[in-house]
Image (tube, rainbow, N blue to C red; front, top):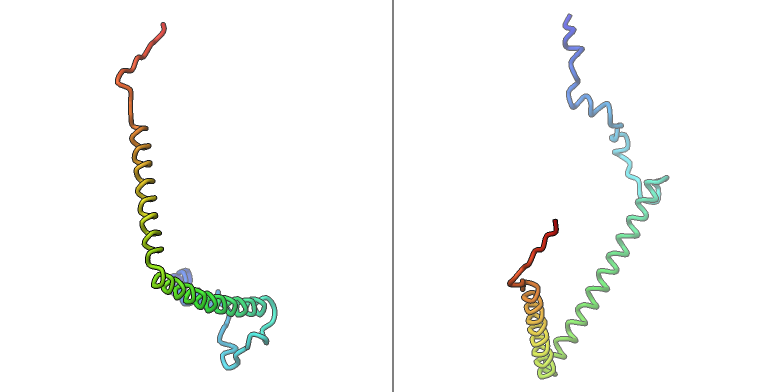
Length: 121
């Protein structure tokens, strides 16, 4: 007899078949969310309720965003001088902030010309 065959490790198919339960028992019957019981059923109902809430929030956000964009476009068409002033003021402010930041970074790099190190014995 071949005793080395019995001592060998099983292949992946045999290990997988022994570790996993038989999931093909209920292939013909499909359970709905309300028919499932236990923790799995509760998780499925929470998942479906969460997805419906996310879908509702997305559609309301999309509608709100479209209305805001429409209002902004109308405002830019009706008041172009106002928006030109806002753009000019923003550019001036950003330029001023950049100059201040540049000046502050240069001030930190200034090193003294003479360094005296005094030692005591």
